[in-house]
Length: 224
Image 1: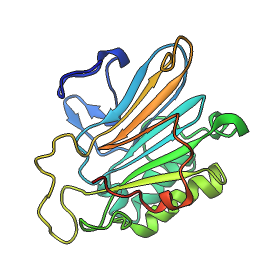
Image 2 (image 1 turned 180 degrees about the horizontal axis):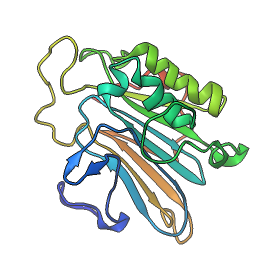
Image 3 (image 1 turned 180 degrees about the vertical axis):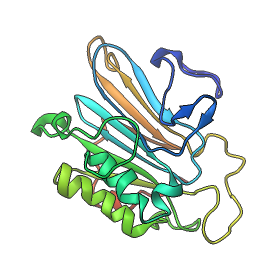
């Protein structure tokens, strides 16, 4: 059990990151991880999100998790199809590091697949106001109309570091915010009983939750 807030939970092993590094320098490349569930616990994620988007797709067999930078992947129309939509779907032209999303790992009737999206909001107050509403809608459609028709989606529209209206950062002192971490445990509910959990900032999701309702795709509420 993890007891110190700044201590890595070693049970799940070293965090598998979602940022590409060349030497000691990070790049702005889209990056995805896709792993089947087996007998070894693991965790995937990234801290310090400023305005990026995270997509996590989970079934009973596997997880896909991708990180897409705001600049230039979302902020410039030329790059959005290449670095986000086409990269996820494995279409050309594309730019990114890691595998394309594989629907075959998520499309069986018994898979109980869900999609969780973490995307920056416009302003501070409205949890249903994505910063890039048209592109955000296209991302959701890619999954629930194209790759996995009808798949339930939950979106957490978080407060970015600097929004387009110039508000000061209201959560600068909350160091646990703007993190996205997925953890898989092959023995979550006893030996050989698999389970997973996902943290988007303060929001917590796991395999015991019912599928997200339709309204969740537009943004889940802020916690009190």
